[in-house]
Length: 341
Image (tube, rainbow, N blue to C red; front, side):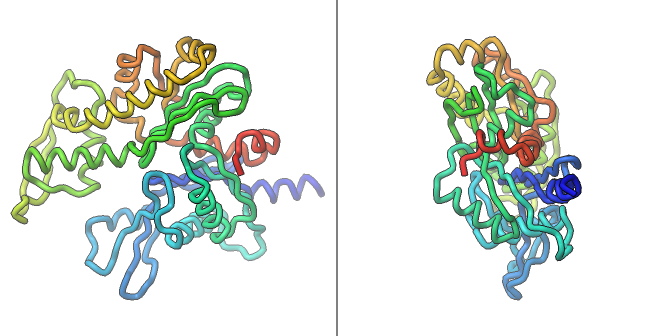
């Protein structure tokens, strides 16, 4: 009887990587159960939710004035409580179904390491309002380290740089705790904004968020490109007329340089504040990269060169946080050690 109950409980215990750009749900025994953009489309005339996730993202920049595609999280924290609640509830329903006999899920959520107590409460309240039974929060770099199978419980230094959509979280972890951390509100979204601003400044053309992201994915590089690639893009001239230009991978590298220098500087500052013994471990073992924003081409090579420390990607950077929060849901001992709620 106990084993049957345990299986039912496990099926309703989930881990959520509640990201600025994307949300991922992990269920023990099933793995990644949902992976969708953190966007909700709202019809302001009817005060009605039209779409959530992937369907809502397809509407970005293409809707009439009364329909708005809203991203309820910015820089890793909730900016619209009600919309976040709707989004989480929709994702949980998609994952677990709508059965009225299902118990409310126990939820573990990854959040930025620099989150404030007020922001913590907003995340917890949103999850509970969306149907969660219990809510636990874990710092995203800790979750990423667990998802990357780093030896976090041992007395050695593990350094993780988790670059998401809204935040870059840098942390040194030892004995299941974060020894030092730094949360930077510069990440993938800011890279997109830097590209859009560069094109506006240098080519007098306005582009949308999705176009900027496409440019980053196709031409972006953290080091000077050896082979220059080109891409034709369309947008709107500053006078309001349609316009088409050709940009190169060198242009995109220049656009991203200031953002990347800020990230490098933050990592260097964190290393300088790290206790010597743990710093020695990091020099020996290297720095681990996680998060979708870390997938910028050649970022590991750039950090290795600038910091003088080997930097490498974990096995699945985009889903490391989700795997980490999902893997501690049923591990009560580890959950007590690493959660801060």
